[in-house]
Length: 300
Ligand SMILES: Nc1ncnc2c1ncn2[C@@H]1O[C@H](COP(=O)(O)OP(=O)(O)OP(=O)(O)O)[C@@H](O)[C@H]1O
Image 1: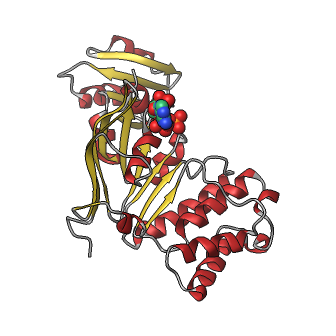
Image 2: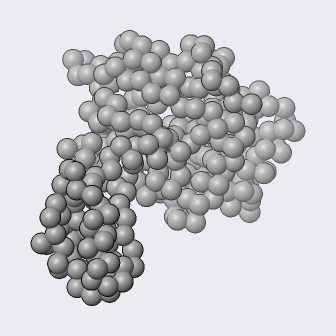
């Protein structure tokens, strides 16, 4: 059962490099059983925050807790971490490498082999298991990185750009694997620049810009919070009459389809009735902003 304390919590974390403040009072939570997308422009501070979460880098202030307990080396050992760049051993075979990492995390030889075989199979690398890592394409090396993060059945997953370099089919496979981990109760935090993937995948979102958290919460809440008073309508004939409709600002008109904003206090049903009075209405409703639109607004 997921309890309230089953969260990975970043609390008031700040970090500077020299006199440059890179993270400023950063707080957010990653809840068990949920996929949390961490998005921000280049240099926003995602990698720095993730490195602090994994103890690779110290915070100047603030702390990171798991189930209410400040992170220790021992606790972090039970985490799965995919850094932006992990040095894989180029000459080692893929399976030896993953087994080795599993053993490092305390798995028995049997368990390490079993998990490695299953993961490599799942990630589409089953028939490459005996090959050296350096012989793999970048995308396949990325799959090995994912196997490396997951081999010890971690309690918590923190993944920096797990989808970069993957083709769309590989993205789907990795999405499936991560969803399973979340469904089994792990909090999963992942950063990505592929907003379409984040939009499809995440339950919760954390948006960072210039080292500060600009928005966080469930994807549904965030989208609702940023919803503009914007509507789309599709009718059978030209929708140009909307120009003269009180309270309506036409944003886009494409023949029978139109997107428009409503002035505060204007009843959308009034506009619908006006449309119906002119003939059939095929669709009518508010436009929910995409993650890309929210992201642009936050970064303005
Ligand atoms: N070791 C370091 N020394 C000095 N500055 C650093 C160091 N690591 C990161 N920075 C700076 O901190 C800022 C945040 O970098 P970070 O890598 O966390 O961003 P990011 O959001 O992960 O970016 P990207 O999407 O490009 O990977 C950048 O301005 C970067 O130059």
